[in-house]
Length: 196
Image (cartoon, rainbow, N blue to C red; front, top):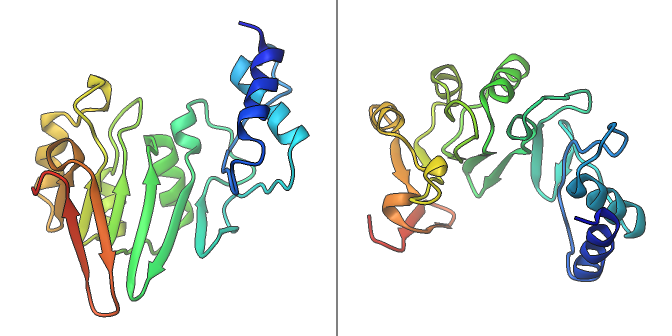
């Protein structure tokens, strides 16, 4: 691969096409930066305006809970951007594919994560939504963005059983298809492409 070419091409493709891009924890000064790291570095250097967000910041109306500026986890999933917001009177927590060390850091820093709806993906290592995190969140609805393929993004039976045993309604995207949340002042509705 030609990192310089990748970086320039990425800038060309993204320039004037994105109003907002959220990236977290890339290190252009690492000894042998990957082509992706070089591309991101070039994008940041040659495009503007640019905002960096971390815990305590905001993305629109969403509060950034994780990661902190000082975090340097080995796995990218542990650096996933965690956002919390309210839509009318419903609270929503977006965990992305937050891995176990990231979940542990979030638990150590946040005292109250209670939320109506939590959305999580499947991290590369371990499972999403540890029992301790679920206890702190106390969600009414869990949406797990798993998929049939690749197999590494498929929720294993043990995880499905564990989440299914929660008081919360658990929705697995592999079964339901795309999930659409529709909010109004009094309630929210969940629509899925496969009707499950």
